[in-house]
Length: 153
Image (cartoon, rainbow, N blue to C red; front, side):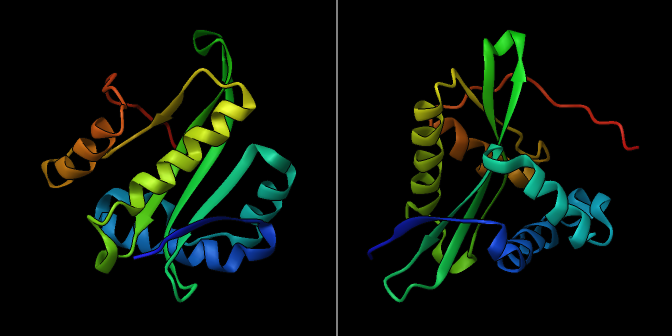
């Protein structure tokens, strides 16, 4: 199977929002904090981020999207400056375990290298049902550094 990796822009926001909502539906209660997607606000915020927010997609040989990965640039002293965060990644269930996730992660890594980042972080759900997801990222070279905490405003 031939898979190509492309990038989408804010012009493709409806497609991106649809794919992220698929992820949140699969996450179930772990994705419920979103509630309703405030698409106009999200689009406006995305546009203000300029090139600090990237969307990578995987397409099959029929040009159908089969996976998505979003990547944000952020800053921290402990990371020696700018670095990336994989915020969302979703592969169509029919296309899982075929190397598509690895292709998307590799595209993110290559992008980060070109930007001069020293690292890319990702948060994977900790519950047992997501053990396979965490193993995937570890196989791709990510190292577990502990759970992440959040505060909802």
